[in-house]
Length: 164
Ligand SMILES: O=P(O)(O)OC[C@H]1O[C@H](OP(=O)(O)OP(=O)(O)O)[C@H](O)[C@@H]1O
Ligand SMILES: Nc1ncnc2[nH]cnc12
Image (tube, rainbow, N blue to C red; front, side, top):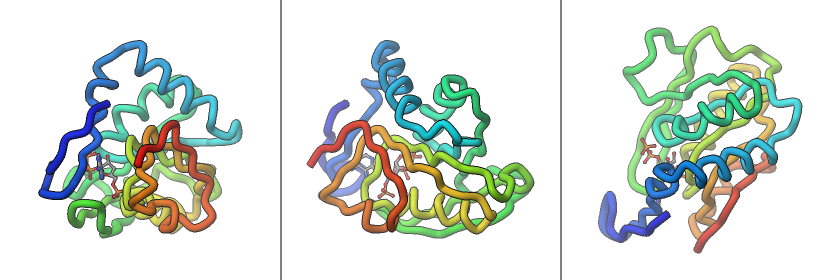
């Protein structure tokens, strides 16, 4: 990965994982490590648009479980629920598709970066409001200086790497 200063706005140190995603061996190592860390009783993966989708497909195949994609507004034909949230550089909203996540299912929330935690906290809220359970939040990279875990309560958070 590489660090790009002042993107998408002044003061943000943007951690760009595109070099990782472009490297087949790195992708394999990351997917294998994420899969190895997930609880065995996970029923479904909830990857977050857009960068979480780059991990969700591989992880779904590696784990043998399906996916419920969590999407930005205006993309889903039928919406179960929506949460508005703040992230490191602004505000946004995420939506859960209707009729695919079942109450009681154990969900792995998957994304590339945990920064302020606003994004994955919003996904956890969508999952739990649907009556499902967040078994784990799995990310490639955590930025602990931004305090993301504090927004996630006592939830199980796995990060492959953390940098300050
Ligand atoms: O912990 P937070 O402060 O919420 O930030 C983390 C989120 O920010 C990025 O997504 P972004 O909203 O930039 O969208 P993208 O995946 O479409 O690039 C990243 O992929 C995480 O989802
Ligand atoms: N600093 C950062 N780098 C990459 N993705 C991010 N998402 C939120 N903050 C980020």
